[in-house]
Image (cartoon, rainbow, N blue to C red; front, side):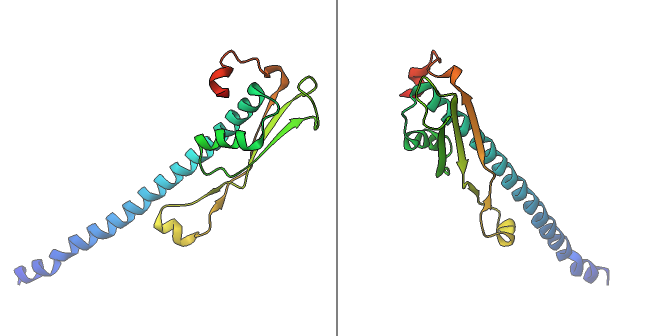
Length: 147
C-alpha cells in the first residue's frame, strides 16, 4: 500500500516545480521588460541632450534631419523630433538657445505575459532639452561632435 501511494505522488513534485518555474519566469521576464523600459527612457533623455548639444555647438543652420540622425545613433527608435531656435526666426547673434524635443516614442514589451495584456505599444512621454546661447560654439571638443 505504501508503495502505490508513493508512486501516485511521484508526479506531484514535477507539477509543483513546473508551476513554480512558470511563476518565476513570469516575474523574471517582467523585471527584464521593466529594465528595458527604464533603459529606453534614459537613452531618450540622453539622446535629447546630445541632439541639443549637437545643434547648439555645431551650427545654427542645421536641419532637423541631421540632428535626428545623430540622435538615432543613440536610440534607433526615435522617429520624430523638433529642433526650435528661440526666439523663432533668430540669427546666430540673436538666438537665446535651442530646444530639442522627442515626440511619438513608443515602447514595446517583449514579455509574452505583458504582451497579451497590452499588444499596443506604450506611448512614452515627450522628452525635451533646452541649451542656452552661452554654449553656442564654445565647446573645445566641437570638432568631435560635429563630424
